[in-house]
Image 1 (cartoon, one colour):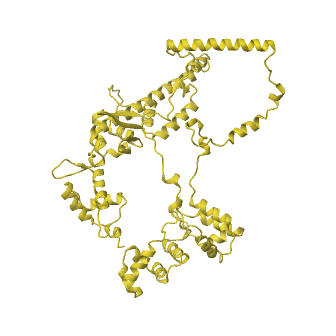
Image 2: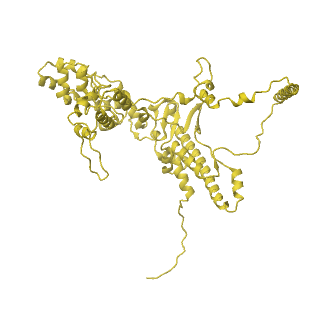
Length: 506
């Protein structure tokens, strides 16, 4: 054992706070970047979202415009001289100070707020009513049911029970009384209608009756506990025949599998009558909340980060800075604060942070544009002709071209969207694995998915194609070599059912 010193020269990457900030900003989405900018504006006094410049802006003056402006100013001077003469002579009427003081300004502003929109036929955006007077919100299923609850003659305990029922509806409009999972992995016990009524102070024997009344509200079948109960309620309310009601009550599993022969044997009726009953059953609504789903949860407005458009024969990539605040240094405020010796160190640190932030945001913008330009160059056929011509591409292809690491490319393309003539896509969309073809170059997996979707859309619905048949058609028509399980996987990703469930008998 001995103690000694060694001198060694090494190189290593040190993650400075500025580098960490640049990497963090690079992987932020557009909305997250806007929030980050707002936070920095609140925390850093030397940052501003508009350029502070005390110097007057110098504009180019047109000589003809200058002459006309001088003439107008001369006429204005003459008018002011005439007005002054009239005032001195007493011809002009002085405004009544008392009448001015008696104006009800609050009433005036209220009338301006409540002013109706201008009649149609007068163009111009300035004449339209404010946007807050035109905003609407889609009505949800719970709102629709709560309105019917207010119009009902329920007593107080029944209303509390109804509110508990509405609070336990799922996105399909069914009553979900299953237990929830705790943090430790255990689950709470499932609830019953009687327990729900007991919690609301309602007699447990009256709870099923109140629930039945709610299930007949619009839409009929809402608040049902499963699909069978939902269809049974609709069939009874709409006056369906006894055969239809019995099929729903006893043979839901056979209905799902289209096993009509088994239903006919069990009920001892001809299969033709089963067919007619199934036609009527298919008219019922299997999802009561279909027309009342909250649009805010299902539809998300996406603002693209970059635009790609064709200018003559050249593809142009431009960034979308609309909605993103452009940051500047408030020079006048910074100079004033730097005069204070006590605040000099604090302002100096804030100034450095502001400069690094502005530089990191600009670097982020340039990196996104650079990566998008490389994607456009490699996927030119996609932008020209469509999804079928999407080429296989991986992160390494772009990383080697732009001279960056694959992890950087991954951060750049995550949650970043591009608007193209073919539609709005996430930058991740253009990275696909390759599928081998017999005589031609490899094809992207996304193109194979679209080919499968096109084949299924054009099939005979009475005799849908099996996965193996789709494999053979892809090999014969497009030369795509793919396994049957791969077709099944892509079909599931597209949300397409199997051939047995796609079959339509009627």
